[in-house]
Amino acid sequence: MNGIVINCPETSLLKNNHIESQHRAMEVLNAEDIQCEWLVNPSRNTIKAVWLAIEPYAPRNVFLSWHWISTWFDTFVNSSQSRTNGLLVAKRGQHLIGAGIFVAQHSRNILGQKTTRYSLHRVGDELSDQIWIEYNDFLMVEDHQDVIRQAMMVALQTHIRSRDAVQIGVSLPSQMIKLEVSSTKPQFEERLIWHSPSYQVDLQQLRQQQCGVMQSLSKNARKQIKRSMNKYQQRGVLLLETANSGEQALEWFDAAKVNHIARWGAKPEQSGFANDKFVQFHHQYISKSFAGEAKALANSAVQLHRLKVGEQILGYIYNLHFGDTVYFYLSALSYEDDPQLKPGLVAHALLIEQAYMDGKAVYDFMGGEARYKQTFSNHKSELLMKVYFQPHFALTVENGARRVYSGLKQLKAFLKAPKN
Image 1 (cartoon, rainbow, N blue to C red):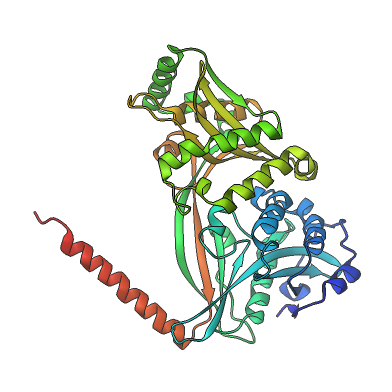
Image 2 (cartoon, rainbow, N blue to C red):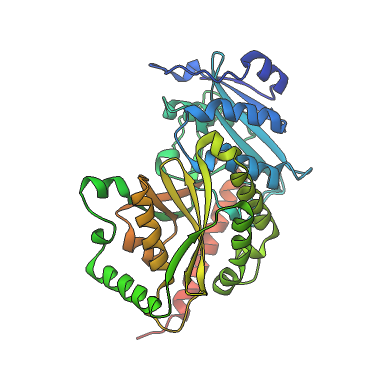
């Protein structure tokens, strides 16, 4: 069993570890070598010091960068006096090797008992989590991630009450583990609550195959893209622009609101642009990116693109750049009655080509099923969200009720379905 200190004073963590940025590669690491500490409502400065000590030695992940995490923390966690959060830190001796921020959401179970759900790098409610973190995981040094993740989850299991739960996601299957039996508590069980395919263009693979972006597509896809480009070019010059300042990027982000709401709906749970917190988060994220701190820390950047033909604006694309990966975050496009005009296909074809020419390794469409993602991608993965919990009577009752409700919904749908 790994060591754990509950409610460790953050001054002790800082004093004992000096937040050293030096990290030596670990040839061997066992679970018993790892000590975990849990800090309740730590200061932002403590979280920043811990994060920046580990991030240089962690796998590159835009959603675990201090750029993303600090903006999320400032917008949704630190701004709320009523929210409880915990920083789980893993160490090997004096070296920090893992960290994760959990936000506690309190409620009552079906028996009226107080219960808490701890969400990793999420708040736990739909509107606050609409910014939608993907590839979510503990921030860990690259060596021995499986051992560190296991030790941190077992430590977390020791911290929480038997009727509490832990939610993790949206994550790759490799970031979701089945826990071993703790020496002090029953084994965690897990429930899958969300899953989706995720699509990527492996640009390195295209280079190795000496294959261009358009050449990699099907004959039908190439035809659709070229036909759409030709139709647009009959109106004027087809141009993909990139915002070159923070002010311009913010202006384009705000301008994307109209098309995005037109496509997804005007309610906060439909379009993020109708959600004040979503907009606030991205205003801060974009501003910090162009202020230079994010680029200096980890080659992190925001790119807002505008697709135009002549003076007509066809839409906006919002991408995140981190290391050698381009992440497609959102689009807000203007669709017309002509089905042969495809602004999304055109914009992504141009952006993927640009990433290819810039030497990027991956153009990542991330989670969500969509035909255009399948059109371009040569790699597919899976994203999951799970809840981990310990078996207890109230949960058995809840799960039974959930199965009954699901069964009734299926029966209702069957009865309403037209019969041949």
